[in-house]
Amino acid sequence: MKLKLNIWRQKNREDRGEFVTYHLDDVNSHMSFLEMLDVLNQQLIEKGEQPVAFEHDCREGICGACGLVINGYPHGPEEGTTTCQLHMRHFKDGDEITIEPWRSKAFPVVKDLVVDRSSLDRLMQHGGFVSIRTGSAEDANNTLIPKEKSDLAMDAAECIGCGACVASCPNGAAMLFVSAKVSHFALLPQGQPERKRRAIQMVQAMQDEGFGACTNYRECEAVCPKRISINFIGMLNREFIKASVLSGAEKGGKYRSK
Image (cartoon, rainbow, N blue to C red; front, side):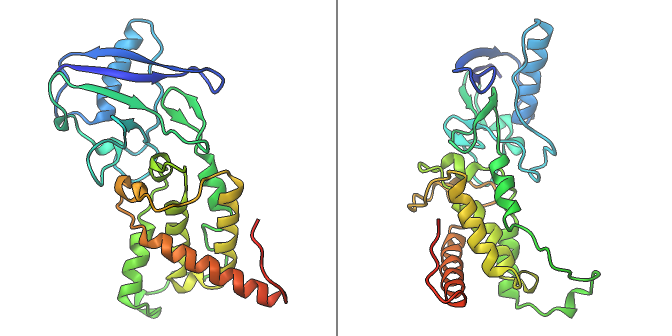
């Protein structure tokens, strides 16, 4: 298989960057997309040129490290698939493929296809965890949770924090990511003690980081490799409103978000 690759090259954050065209011959259709880039980089190294910088880790669709915009689609054209799980059999001989980094104000480009996604880490630091003491591990049947709620919590927990939702949103919103984290704990007993504080703090942190607002384009849901539903955004809105009202009542006044 022969391919024409238009790849975004950018030396650092200050560099303007540009697309550079490369040609690859004899690409095996059984390769993953990242393995194809490995082959390209090996050829560039042998020529004494700088390899293309891109992120990866587990290459099993679990960690969320890989993230490329392929022909205009975050993670590529296949639904429910991470970049590392995308295989070259989905492309044809002679195809022209354009590869870009995530495009979002909150994800500045570090180099080539690598972006700084630490803003998502900072969001997690404002409530995407349980800090209370839950004791040692117990048998699953000791804490009774309705199956409907446990299934929903697991659906939300599938979010791998790759940032495709942000990169695809015309507003650069992180609502799907935050809603998955907030909903996950709101549905489980372990998340109840910090439920109000989590919703308020994570939404405020999202605003402070400069993420845009959700206006229901649904691009986030369409490109999410784990098929996270935008129904969780509705749940996040309810959690935030309820927490805001209750916090205002506890303080004897109306709560005002930043």
